[in-house]
Length: 132
Picture 1 (cartoon, rainbow, N blue to C red):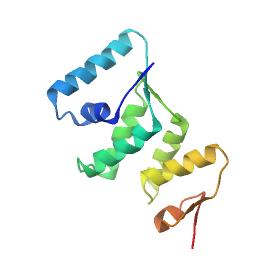
Picture 2: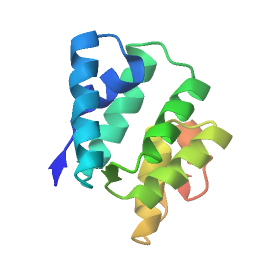
Picture 3: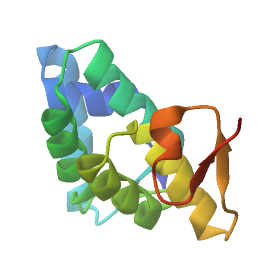
Picture 4: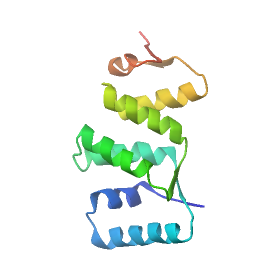
């Protein structure tokens, strides 16, 4: 199994470089044809959310839509997929950052709570506590 970098997913979502988009789509089509998956590290998810928001000006709803779409792609295999799904749901409903909800979901997965933080918004999320 091969892995994908953030920039490949960005090209597929934003479609801002026709040559790179074509290459990325060709790779995905090859994986589908060969019944293979591409691994997406958890760090790619974090970077992807940040790039879409900060570099391309995606609103929170657009980020959620983009992340939800790639999570359903059968040719992609995500590290800690259940934590990503939980983080995405909580991000949609909450006020903290996506990264905070992902930290919380990963911590909960290994029964490591609370997540101590100095971030007041994050501290309001279930499983987090403000360190004063």
